[in-house]
Amino acid sequence: MAAAKTKKKAAEKPGRKAPAKKQPATGRLKKAVPSGEAKSAKQSNAAKTAGKMTPAGQKLEEIKKKLFLQRETILNEAEVAMNALPDQTVFPDLGDQATVESDRSFMLRLRGRERRLLKKVEEAIDRMDKGTFGICDICGEKIDVKRLMARPVTTMCLNCKTEQEEEEKIQGI
Image (cartoon, rainbow, N blue to C red; front, side):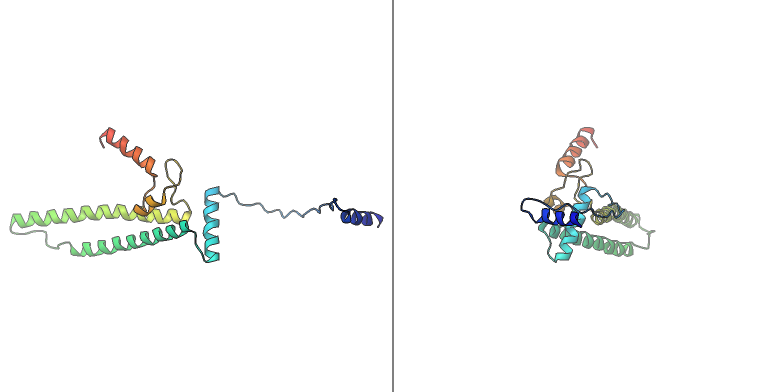
């Protein structure tokens, strides 16, 4: 009892602190999350709960909407184009047949390009969901928002893309 009174008196005297109480251990370990993902996850959660988004968050939402719209447009155009392909492939006139085959080849080539673009759009949406959107695949630096607005499917920053294009030019690709 006397020890408890001396601790109280020591805590009441100016300049002295009461002894710290030990906290019970919970036995829980925090999950290790890379700092970039943790920050983006915290920012997006904080923005959602507050009802206000940061300017960067607003830009990302704009880009995401643009990607979804682009995906829908590609899918709709592909459906229309596949229905527009001519059913008749054999014509009595060789000129007509050559024209139809040329048009068909051109349309299929466009569909192939759009299929690759659709794949890139879906990968960009996946990167947004994972929190890795806007990070260069080569150097790991942030990609400028202006570049992302211009080309949302990009995976490289401007410097890395420029270097890649210069190497391709040298190699003649």
